[in-house]
Image (tube, rainbow, N blue to C red):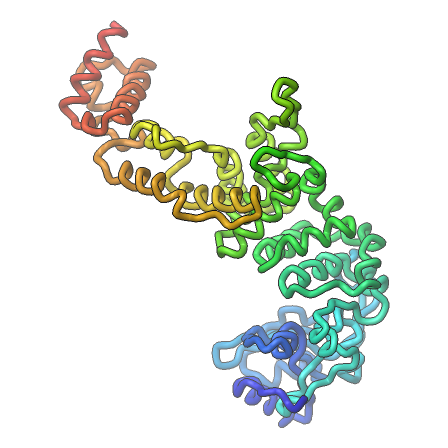
Length: 452
């Protein structure tokens, strides 16, 4: 394989290093992307220049991790992380090295990396490959393999086992046997990793082209039981009826469909967790000989809330995911009245409906394993849209009257005022044409007579 094509900006930056008598290499995921034939503008560099020397070479340098030999340079509007060749030792927190030592060569620096596919470098500006661990060959073989002994790499950084399965989901690669077999022995180290870092990897798995591949590998290695025991408990929980799969496989297929369709993060998460409560509420209907899962959506929301808090998801994400899970069991029929559609909108929330319908598609995909026809939801979508365009009210603030109007019409302030407003809203939900000031005041006066 000849020299790789190097972006002109990287060549320009490289000449600044070489002009000062220093070596510089492109490293990390950008090299992997080059070998996979993908474009990447997320560039990390490794150099034999010390951080203090890098600071003198560029006008704008941010000391983002200078204690560990890393700075960030800003050049022509692009940020690049630059790290001095180094080796590491002692990882008492299971994540970051206690000590680092600057290394003399790029080969020694690459020896500390996690996987062979991430342990190749490109010499700049020439563009030739430095590949001491055959990362290029493993990429060609579609294999994820640790640099050196997998047990040592995983003992250094407890996040690496989860990164391994995440790459399997993202790239469709297999885990090399020794790498796979080393993960169970590293679970204690993984358990010490900060929840936020675990969350980042889980999000990447859920956003990958094949999330089920990552979660199945997590199940096989014990990572699922360690990090998501609520999901692992769904294995072997049969459903039957319309369902072809147990609860775990159903959930993984639903998440996979949501990821494939590019649905938002909250929908992917809801697809993965929407049936977590089924193992706890499952009951056998003796008369029909079938399993029932009454109110599983509420139990699923409770369990999911625990997971989202455990991994410190933002409150806005938690709120949306839990609302989706609680509402995912709606059963629309053409016989629904217009008022019933309006009540659905009120209960669900107009903002949630597009994502809730996406979750319904994902749920359907996970039930049969066959991609559903999105057109099946069109009649319901049209009725919702029609309802939203009609003059009416979906909340008290939408009414043509307010509490002050009612008091001006003789309604005494107090509990009855709130009751009358609620009844007016219910009347307008049934008949949007009633949402006119004069008509509502007339209705209010009639209701008020009951409280006099």
